[in-house]
Structures are given as structure tokens and as C-alpha cells.
Image (spheres, helix red, strand yellow):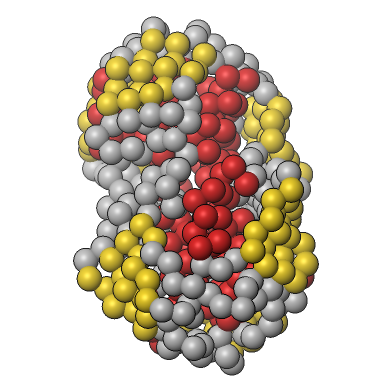
Length: 417
């Protein structure tokens, strides 16, 4: 199993190109199930999760061609309504095939998903919404079985804003008969990106990026050629790294509009951030200032940046409170940061972080995707050597992160075992 070894204490300097967003690419690749003919998607990141979704789509009957960061998918031969456990268990986003399969094949049998251990994240809102569109839903032997001769437009209210739920039902409703309205819809940029692609395919979707999305169903959709938006979480991770190491890093292929909450908090923490078009320069100050954070659905501070920001607060001047309101098990990384000398106390969904003068390198264990990134950041800032085990989590969401950090001057390497 691979390990990443980091020698801390080096300021990061230079340019880093931000990859395409995993959380945008996954639903957009799945949207190809709604069309016949070749779709072309560019700026697709090379990640384990992307390989997993491609394998699943291929199993469903799609033809897939990959060349670098370009993925072409033809779902004309879509003929298999079943997404089996062995393919779905690795990644929760696999549930995204449910809506398109019912819309296109009139039936679906999809295994209940797996993924990172950061909370229950139930799919009941997906199923409730699909039932509102007219699908018959049954849970049997660990599978969701859904049937519908033709989905029909409906008004759907989400009790809790859900990104994948919004995306799943938006894709299903695109081919439904009539008008669907999604209320309390997720507003994340990845939802907007999917809506934009569906509209390019010929869908009629209005309101993406707001809490109310209206979808007028159409009879068919056409293949498209489109690029994946940049990854705002990867961008935020490199921004934190620049501040942590008192570095000077410019992010290229970055959308600052998607990073407003992260930029605001980093400026409060003492970072100097300058924006020029799609480039963002981040310079760390002489002092890191303790700053409170509460995760919220977009446009609030993203839960996927909580672990990284906690590392920054671990060496800040003062005490900060970090509250996690999205996932109940997302403080798993705290025990590993404590091993490196961080002073963190947890009470319910809030972590009190007392800044220490420095972190110390130590052997640590990655537990999920963003926790893995936080441990890399901690290693960059620590005195001494940090060995991060079980880094396969990183490969699910960061494309060659150790190579990008090395290009910025970090003493970091991967050991393959």
C-alpha cells in the first residue's frame, strides 16, 4: 500500500494548475446515459473515482474512449439496468446512475452505495423524489429497484439540500413528461455545471444555482462536447498550503467565484490573496490569525475544506472554533493531528483548536479523502518527517497531489509498496 513521505518546513513557491473538478465530472459523465451518440468531455481529472464511474458506465452498456484528460462516451448501446454491488460499493456517487437509468430504460437496479466513512449520507431523498416523479421503488437484498413506464413532472421538496439528490432528480426530470420543480435544491457550482451540460444537450432547466430549479421535460437529448469546471476544493487545498508554509503560490485555471467563502476566511487568517481573472495568487503572512469557521451548504464554507482549514488553525495565534454542520463523522482526522502535536478538543460537532508554535512530523493514517489532504498539509508545515499511510483515499480526489506539491518546492515523495 502506497505511502507519502513529507519533510516539512519548506515555503511553497510557484504556479500550480488546478485540475477539473471530480464532483462535477462524475455527474456530467453519468449524464451521457441520457443520450445516444458520442459525448466528448475534456479537462476530466485522472482519479480513482473517475475510473470507477467509467467502469460502471461501461458495465451498463456504454462505450468509452479515454485519451489523457479527454473522455468520450457513447451510450447508444445502453442495455443493462443493473449497477452491481462490486462496482457501486467503492463510491457513493454511483447512485447518480439511478435517475438516468429509470428515465432511459424505464427500470433500474442499483446497489446501495459505499464510499468514505464520514457519516450516514442516506439516499432517502433521492428515492422520495424519484417516487414523486412516478417511479415505483423497492429495496431488496441491498439494492434499489425502480420502475416507471414514463416519469412525470412533479414538485419535489428536499428536507435537506442534497447535491447528489438534486443532480439525480434533475437528470431524471430532464426526460420526464411535464414540468418538475425542485425546491430547497443544492446550489453548488457542480450542480450548475451539470445543468449547463444538460441544457447543451437540449434540456430545459432554469434556476440552477438557486434554491428552486425548474425542469421542463423533453423527449430526447443530444450528445455534446464540453469541458469540466475547475476543482474548487483542490484550489482551496493549495491556497491553505501556501498560507501554512508562508509561501507564494499562484493558482492557474481557477474560478475565484466558486471560492468566495474560502478566500474570505483565509484573508481573515492573514493571507494576502490577489485575483486576476482565472488566476489567484496566495501569499502567507508572518502570522496566522485564529479564525472561527462553520461549514454550510454552498455558498457557505465547504465541508470539504474543513479538515484543511483545521490544520491551518492548529498553528494559528490564538483559539478558533470549527463547527461541522454537514457530516457527523468528519472529525476523524483530529486524532492524527493530535499525534503531530495539535491541541484540539471536540465537543459535539465543534472542535476547539488552540494554536501551537509548530507541528511535529509523525507516522499518521489517512481515513478519508479530505482527511488525507489535511495530513499532507500538516506534513508540509511540520518540523521533521511525516509518513502518511493509506493514501489511496487521496487518489480518489486529488490528481498527483504529491507531484504538484513537489513542483512548488515541497520535499515530498510517494513510496509504492
